[in-house]
Length: 322
Image (cartoon, rainbow, N blue to C red; front, top):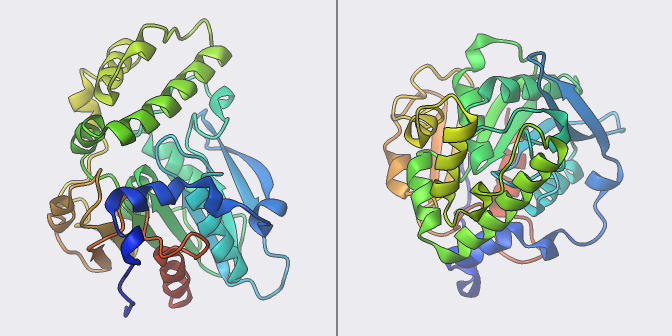
């Protein structure tokens, strides 16, 4: 597929600027029909897990299809990039479903068990149920960061069936090797502070809803993502250690060898969280496209504060071509 390269103005080109803009609330201000017409939905994934989401249907008869969006770690269905991307898709004729991962977006009360990125089956089923809400036209799956990791794994296991309308997956700045990404976050004071604040608030909320199951008081004193992960894994999981846990959702070089769903990964060479070499290490497969821009940071690709992101326009073009 032909596409215009991402060329941000010089004053927005820095990797950390792009990364900050991705979640900047200012970009999501103003009227948004995506939110105005959204319906809160609770999905029963069949395995005892319930996931929260927001569905914005199209009432017009010319619906082009459905977009299912997956946010990143400690983001939510109402993260800036979810709202702006969803708005652009909605305005271009698509119904939109924004799915919250477990323990994200004020959904902590829905499940007693903690969120782990290895919980692929419930997300796979959540996306499947979301695609069945709109039977008009094709469905495209879009994931950001950790949500991009889920999108890749869902695309890789798509052949197991259950999807009636899903025709393509788009993964933006996906986490490929969580161990490397965790180390990078821990060595970046700005990004570390952002995630520590959000994760601590999330864990406090979980403890509030399930006070007899969890006591995170000591764990919350951890000063790194790796340190908190190590303690959580030791106390509240069946994994031997965080290395085993991270291995459970790592994207390997051969992860796409049986790919049957078309997949596009959009990445930036200057991503401060994901090493660019890991993208080039993925073994090419039929239906797989890799787009690496020189700039874009993590989840960025922003050309202007009030402009759609580069990937917003790409997704519309990509979905229209199916």
